[in-house]
Image (cartoon, rainbow, N blue to C red; front, side, top):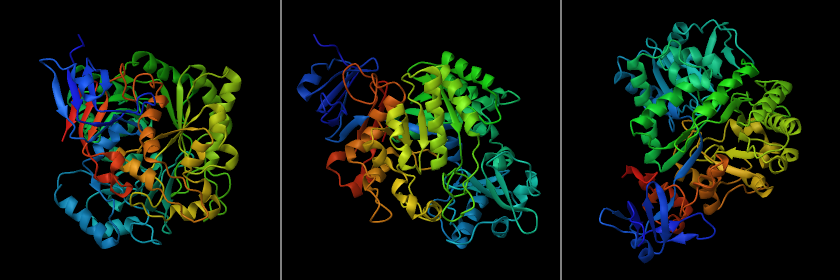
Length: 555
């Protein structure tokens, strides 16, 4: 007698991502695991009196999306901020900000997200004077999509103590105007951190800003407020078909919040939270990373990773390059670590048996991080470490084969290339320069060289929707006819959000595919994704998300 299932999804076009059984019609789930996946008649043998049967109406069913690079806590908080994506020109910006401000008279600081570097025009950079004309009497700040630059009006700069500048660490800058005062443009976290604190969202950003813990310890009311923010983020993920999250900032506070939510039965996604190592820390502070890994190692909540930033971003000239920027020939960027500091760190992290993920956008940063991983292998011996390089927006030809040679994962984001998903080409393509375009956002080049390429959104830097990311990967176009095609096929793109995400987390034996014995993490889509034209992929929506056999979202 076949086992009785808790839940069956039938009448489906199931894309399993399992090469042994690539397609099926129905799937049966019991106790959070897949117990059968086959033709409809075979699976329905598991139907019992208490089985819930879901009709997929011939829509695709795919493994639950694994978001391999995102910022859950900050992204959840930003859902309430003004969203400026698609806004261009001073008048449109003015209208959006004033409308938002009028509806929120009690906010101490007004915050906006997604302001393009060219939001005013292709040539005019935002200053505090522009923002003063829009909103002179209330503190207002807005962030670039990459979250590495913010702009503030004079009121906000005064209240945050930034108008007359501040001493900052490497790679951070308060841009100064001709009058000797802050222009309003703030580059990297140390520069704009006081504005986040002014807005009262410093706990939300701690995992990014310092990797430290709230001090003083949150009150019960503050803890409840933080849990509510985190819950909102989890709901947003589930709505988009996400069943697993690899967070890219972290501290113990985030793990404790998620653990409390798990105890309440409200953890809608599986979450991995890293220890965030900053350049002002000492190697003995990695003890905390080991404690986090030992304390949290379940299938729902885990740690075991150390996240690091090596450089900034291209648009603010804070990414580290091998050769100077095309539009700034005297500048290659300033690393957040010296090469030797990073080598020492990589060796220490690897010796502890922890995984490492390093933000590395410029080709100089990518090279330095690969050098660190290579040094760790020499010092500690080769193991299945699956260290990661995050973003890889520019790479040199010499470093492409090193990913496969060192067993390093290339973690990349389909929404990021300029020209994708509504992003403007400028100023990024001019910063990079045509000579480097062939090896920019080089997903296909790395994959063809044997690298494991995992996809993600970097939310809230880009929209969280994995289907939009899949579409961006499929539709990717070169900037010049002479550049190589870096696009992925539909199946390769889906694998980037499923199979490769599971591999990046050492969980390929439990998730990323739909097969008997695997975790019951899946998404029921509104249509047949394989039969949908690439240009129309965005119309295919998650109708139901199932994580651990439980429905976490239903349209």
